[in-house]
Amino acid sequence: MEKQGCRYRKLVLVPCPFQGHINPMLQLGTILHSRGFSITVAHAQFNSPQTSNHPDFVFLSLPDGTSSKPVMPLDFLAFMSNLNLNCRAPFQEFLSQMIEKQDQHDQLPCIIYDGFMSFAQAVACHLKLPNIILQTGSVASVLTYFAYPRLQEEGYTTPQGIRTQYLLH
Image (cartoon, one colour):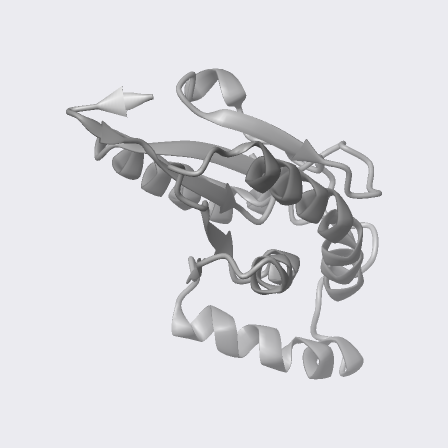
């Protein structure tokens, strides 16, 4: 693919499957695509993005071992841990195949991943691919993640049976 005499540069975006994470990643993808980058979005099956809204992107659904129904899990930390564990192998296989198929003039893809999707960094480092983290939350939200286990232990978190649907689209 050519644009203004230069090869398209390849980016693989790996968003966390929650609305406040998917939307900024896709917005970044749109901006970068307008600058000549080819965009592949490797996403968990859980709460998949609307592919029809981005016809110029390639979407890769990673088997994540969860239900694809967008219901917020009660144990967020266990959910994210399982998601990272289950998505790692399919993501590594996809990138390995992408690297094998390229010709000698192609550039290696750069991985841009959400901070919650740590498997993407592990795979990128294993394959010696450039990678960048996209942190979509504020400093206050990062501090909340560190405090969450204590808040849960002391009973300050959402009671069972009540779901926080606002994180999903």
